[in-house]
Image (cartoon, rainbow, N blue to C red; front, side, top):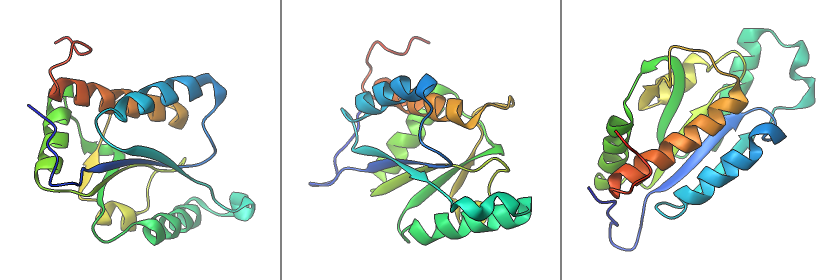
Length: 167
């Protein structure tokens, strides 16, 4: 498999996460794998911070506020993959195939979204073209960022038939 370029354009990947900046204990790993992904696709992180006065909001109100922020930044043509505990699970090879398919179908911008502490609002899940569950286990959001960036790098290395992934 190869990662094709469509004319002069190549699919861009964005990792969006609701919350604070990367904690120090995962920052180096996230930067390492994000840097490696850049050899295959343009990639960047978008950390979506909420206003400080949201602490008094109920779970439903907080998710709604996060949804407004997320949906306000998404473009119509963005392909949204929402990380959700009830989403579909993939093997590493299946994830690589998904990246290949999105690239082949000329997706311009692939957005992977990690929601806030209470998950994602139904409006965001409805907007998502795909809901993806990393595992049946629950992980801290900071670790999800690290796992996500590593798995996307792994998928890219599979597509290029590189030695990083051993099945």
